[in-house]
Image (cartoon, rainbow, N blue to C red; front, top):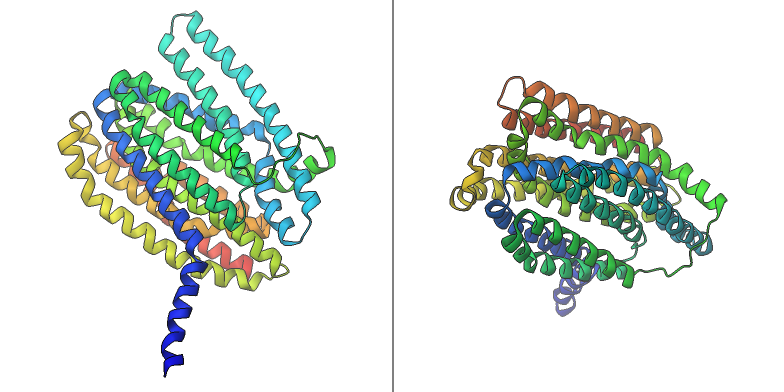
Length: 423
């Protein structure tokens, strides 16, 4: 009797230890998201909707500049955990050396373009746009190195370090809101530069692999051969993801875009959590695929198990936020009262986006045909659905509803494609 009574405790303890890393990582990612929600209070009181609209449009440069990366980081994201699961450590380290060399080149090119555009604005007296574009350029360069470094965090020990870094980021993000309070729009830019720089410095200090800068043409070609198709598909999706802002700007004005941009903060805060969980799942999927000798059938079971938890998590969070948003906006964000319904819709759009994180399995398997179908269909939906709904609703609600429907349909398309690729 004693043995049968104690055994479940051991099993429960084992399960807790087994999932300790992911639990800690998700909790710190949630903390990071909450820190961005806190910043919204200060942005609402100290940044005008028009300035926020200008910032949002300029920030799209960061998305378009990712074109320079050429899929190198995407290739590293996929190949590094796969090679480590196969015990090919030397090739893995060579990929890291070549990737960081390439990323430096991308950063220099981005700096030149950013300096020219910023200089143009400043020379002709558009000081606000000049400073904004310069800030966006620096953030873009930081993001290049950020994405490379995060691709090298693969094991549980690495993710424990990443959890610590996320905690520091969240604390810095909360305390630095004072910059917004004292300096308004420029304080918002300074704060973002500060927390992004701090984050990438910590990623650099705790980086799992310390390798020299070396250019290996064969390794770069190998990374591009894997990463370029992934990058092109992800890049198409990234561009489509910015289409809602351009549609609002076309059918309304910069003021309305600023209000919509404020609504996007709720979506963006959820996106931090979604991307954090995605960056944890992707290497785990790939490592498992390599460890099981590329057994496709096990990946469908893994997709179903993972998606079950994702649907629960990313349904519960938007429901809570749906009832929380009206109270907060009415009491604290008087300049943004028209955004309530838009923000409520966008948090559900973020949740529906989170449902489809299991699509990373297609990347892990290099299922090119199904990956292309998933990304292209999602991109088309993100453009066509907002364009359709903006004709029948007010621009704010119409575009947000279109984004929400696009992600809802994408979930079913993703599930169908993963099933086809794995069975």
